[in-house]
Amino acid sequence: MNKKLKIAIIGSRGYPYVYSGYETLVKELSERLVAKGHSVRVYCHYSLFSPRPKYVNGIELVYTPSIETKFLSQIINSFFSFVHVCFSNIDIVLVVNSANGPFGILTKIFNKKTCINVDGLEWLRPKWRGIGSVYFRLASKLSTILFNKIITDSFKMNEIYNDKFKKNSAIIAYGSTMTNIKNRNILDKYNLSEKSYYLIVGRLIPDNNSKLILEGFLKSNSSKKIVIVGDVPYKDEYAEYVKGIKSDKIIFTGYVNSQSNLSCLYENCFGYVHGHEFGGTNPTMINALFLNCEVIALNTMFNREMLQGKESVFFEKSIQSIYKSFQFFDKKYNILKEKNKNYLIPQKYTWEYIVKKYIKVFYQLTNL
Image 1 (cartoon, helix red, strand yellow):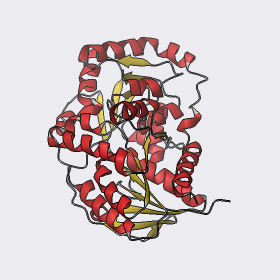
Image 2: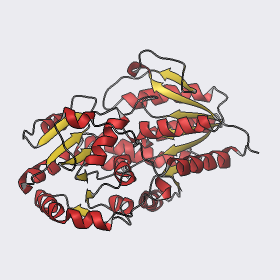
Image 3: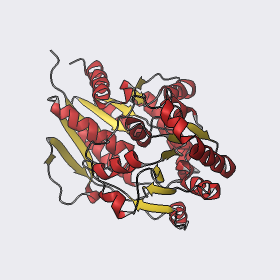
Image 4: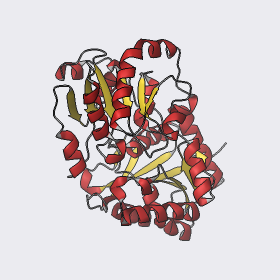
């Protein structure tokens, strides 16, 4: 019988803190690892938490310094977290975010077995233009050299890392965070009824294409409304522009931290709209698949991989393609719903399967 592991997780904002896919992964994975008897430590941004308990839900929390800016917060926090973990008795370190690639030299020197979830094509994201793009490309390369194992979240992302960096990866996706709690309070709050609105969930950043989608939606003259869940935690010109698009048909909710409220918005939407461009497996799409929402998505290789086996509508990155796709979706909704009535989310997107895959990687690296 394998011994129970001491696991540290570095690279997210911390626990419990739901903001992006990384934080969702850390929450869902760490809670399930603890339930299976493993010890889990999560490194947290000191400035984001008050109070700062040492344990929450059996998970050890270590608060390391950070400066909450768009560019430096994670780098600074990760540096101190890596230094701390190198002087601990942790068996295995799980790192999220390819930006942490250079810090692998520390765990390598101290012989700490370490794997990294590299996520998406960060160097292509518009928000990392110039030196940011160069840094992410270098950091992603170093991730493949300095860490014992890299983890990608889709077959297509694995192919990219094979082609670009000549490195094979463990492929482990994300799971859904939807609940079965029936709570319609958020619908009442925004005066929404069942199937009366499209739904977008995601950060208001250029590569999620909210601006383009809203402009295309308004041009389509759809009778539906459109609800946008998400924001960014810093002052940002693009996000402010998107939130400045005014129409009676557009509703901005900001962050929705209640999983029951978020589940309600997914479950009752007319269609889930996915404009994410550079990720692999995206958690917001997984939520839509879990509840078998009808989907209209940007035509990328990653989105097509996630939507295999589910009849969906795809659009190109242009206002004309988007508004025509909304018009088509409005007309063909009943046909889509009928074709998808027996759809079941693939096993690879379930948390129990995901946790088993991570544990397998951990034991392979530690030989414990």
